Image: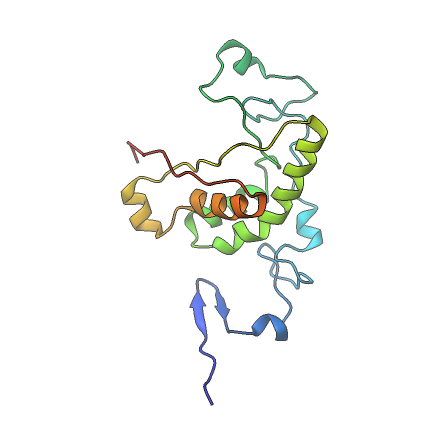
Length: 174
């Protein structure tokens, strides 16, 4: 009989079939997450980005189509979207995703980003983008981290939304 081999990734030990034996732990508080990777208590800490600039996604105190900065100097892109404000604990999760070798964090946030995106698109009537273009890492950063978190998230989002991912950009500076 063959034995299942444990694989250690960062702080988590993955054993094939372990999810059937153990409830998944929340990526933030490490408590049982009832079939998710982000428990309800920690999910409630994420602040939705409700009133935001349609161009840059900067949070705004009241509904306004564009922030003052985008009205005066429009950026080179048409639109941006952020499901949640970049506040604690999201900022900590993003830092772990980028620098802590923790792709599980992105996968834990993915269903919540998808839900927020679908809700926002339904409310606005705006279509989904034609493609996702992840921001590349400089080759030296890619060697350090071993993966590009933006590309990995874009692949997951693209698969779930049926949108092509086009890694078309090149990073000139680190």
